[in-house]
Length: 307
Ligand code: FDA
Image (cartoon, rainbow, N blue to C red; front, side, top):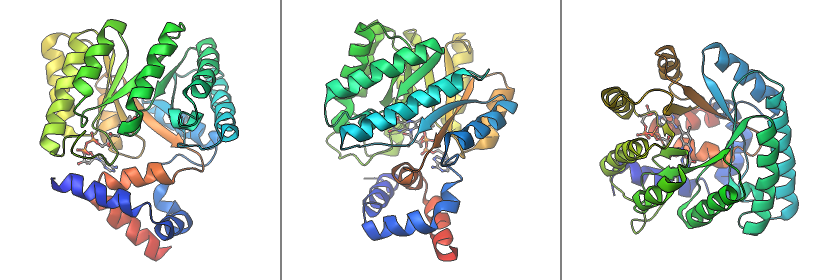
């Protein structure tokens, strides 16, 4: 296992500790705000306006995952519909992201499906795209099944995410080609065992590039979701060489990460979207961001000490 994988596993395991969680929730809020737009939809919409001034579009994400009751899932769904309606009143491109476990996937796929149907119907009225984020490997099959089911039900304003660290992903991509599914390619943010995921960062990076190229060569609209300078450079070079125009792909980055690069890409004429999370359920998302970069752990440790 290389250093990046070991570090990620260490941080994600540490994040499960209840005392650490309590400490971070009470004292780490200030640092967390670097990655999270705010507690409320209104705060998130202010961030959207600021991004739009730099020609960066937003992907709004109401934070929440792994719900264990139907009531919670329904509550999240109502909030997401409120988000879609609020975006519908604004002149910017409308795009939200959600997690299926936020809509009760672990309780019942049928429940999550019916909540998704209502969200997508509302989103369609507002010309809004809804990306289903990809969660950890035990949920990949159910997420891909959900995508197919929604497409069969006539919804084309949704798409999935493929993670380059998973060994299965090339096959998953192959299966999505006949559907012309819009895909987002990411490296993957969860702690996964060597049976299912590559543990060598160089392999994960190489797979990422390969998947993006394969998706675009086969005509899938592709969101290249990475902050990695070498990957961004290579995708710019390759798309130019292949004559693949900016109408066939876009760059996606996270709010609070490499803001200068986001602005630069937008100024160069690429479509750029920043993933903007908001809400009070920020701890799991924040833990994954810390797990991506050792320097972040130092920042968070400092903010815990300083309060
Ligand atoms: P890598 O981790 O190699 O980082 C490259 C460089 O980017 C670093 O050297 C650093 O400069 C910068 N960087 C990266 N992460 C940083 C951080 N947290 N803080 C500060 N700087 C950082 N994952 C998943 O499993 N399912 C999903 O649905 C999604 N969705 C998603 C959407 C979008 C828009 C993005 C950008 C990412 C995701 N991810 C995700 C997360 C993804 O899997 C991955 O964990 C992160 O993007 C980090 O990987 P990079 O490709 O940026 O490269």
